[in-house]
Amino acid sequence: MDVIPQGAAIDSVEPIPNDDRIDLHPGVVDLWCFFYEERDEGALKTAYESLMTSAERRRCDRFRFEKDRRMFRATRALVRTVLTRYQNVAPADWQFDEGEYGKPYISGPAAAPKLSVNLTNTKGLVVCAVSAPGGELGVDAENLTRTSDTIAIADRFFSASEVRALHAQPEHKQQERFFTYWTLKESYIKARGMGLAIPLGQFSFLVDDGDRIGIAFDPRLEDDPSRWQFAWMRADPHFVIAVGADVSPHPMRLRFRKVIPLADEVMK
Image (cartoon, rainbow, N blue to C red; front, top):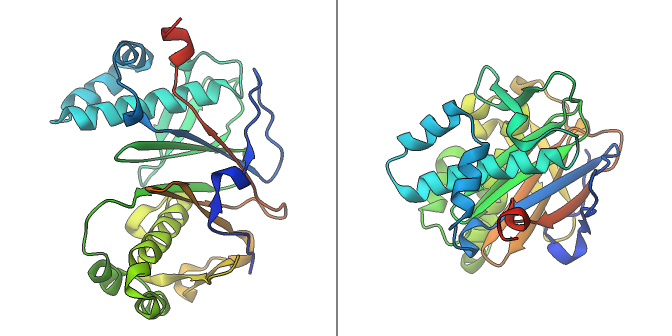
């Protein structure tokens, strides 16, 4: 079973190079993070809207609340400007489509290599994960201040081994352990591109208090644990991020950068 260090802090993760064009080597997973509520949207709103297609603008307008429209704008701006760091394609020219279960993928321009990319957002944070083409990739982020009955959710949906491990934690650690499992599980099902068509109880994460993360599958899933590598990290005191990737046989290397899309251009 492949295992890699878990619970990394930002300062222990390699920074993404601040180059005009960024190279991706096998095994590298880049995490681009936009803490979009840390800055007044102001003039950036118009810039973000200018990058969206007419279909994206219609989708944005359908959100009832401005907080949801702002998250949507931040998500679209991040993925478009991030991908341009890897290929000579203008942010507005990237095209996207969705798979059978709704997983987005790059569909154009035709000449651009099909990078592996995955997105996640939670209140206050949008994350874009990018890796070399070919392998499956999934990312999930959660805000630890979110209130919910985490133990009841775990008891209903997690595997039996995860539920036992969660209940064995001291009460003050159960919330964090829940979100560790939850984000890891989301990263896996997003990488597979099948969402909740994969029952959460049919795979189990093996997380100890050291530096190892493993995964085990119910035979019904017909998946091979040895092809997967996972990482879990704190993006800051209030956010956690999990990544799942099929980058074997290469060891997964995480790189991280915090960005504000188009800030340099708009604030000149």
